[in-house]
Image 1 (cartoon, rainbow over the protein chains, first blue to last red):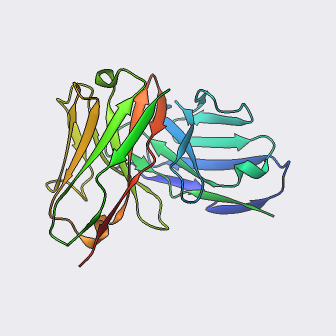
Image 2: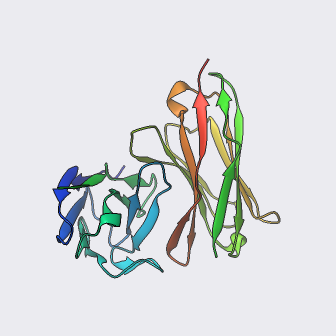
Amino acid sequence: DIQMTQSPSSLSASVGDRVTITCRASQGISNYLAWFQQKPGKAPKSLIYAASSLQSGVPSKFSGSGSGTDFTLTISSLQPEDFATYYCQQYSSYPLTFGGGTKVEIK
Amino acid sequence: EVQLLESGGSLVQPGGSLKLSCAASGFTFSSYAMTWVRQAAGKGLEWVSTISAGGGSTYYADSVKGRFSISRDNSMDTLYLQMSSLRAEDTAVYFCRGTVAGNYYWGQGTLVTVSS
């Protein structure tokens, strides 16, 4: 199974900050990586697929990069609505696996 | 607009069975693979199962293999998850998810509680 390791597990940031979250795969997954945002009590919302493609309707302040084993999600200027938990997920092979999540909190 | 609406979640006793449904609309359901993902309270997301567009290929997490069965009715635009031999650790919100032209779409989830 491919293990997905996210870091950090949580972070505190201020409105307007640039935030970067890292996701590392235990083996190469090409660009078969997606990013999701989840707020408490809500369904996940998809942000990025194929490592760097923005899901339709998602603002351009979100961007993804990486290939192989190392990936990043960047939020260019954090806004109040961006405080949430973020997950990566690989879809290179079954079983599909998620990272443990990164909780972005208000400083 | 893509919409996914789960139903069927409830309280069930350990060892019992339950069938979840996910009604899809806004896209050509029969053209895309569909997935179930679950989330226990306060925990992360866990992939459960995926079925191919035509239903001929199915995949399961080891934690549910042999107990859960994924299926779909493309004439009814509906995805199913038949769950049996339920355990306390199966307690979670279950989300259905579709991948349409690379984009992921999620339902709102349905709660399954396994308890005596």
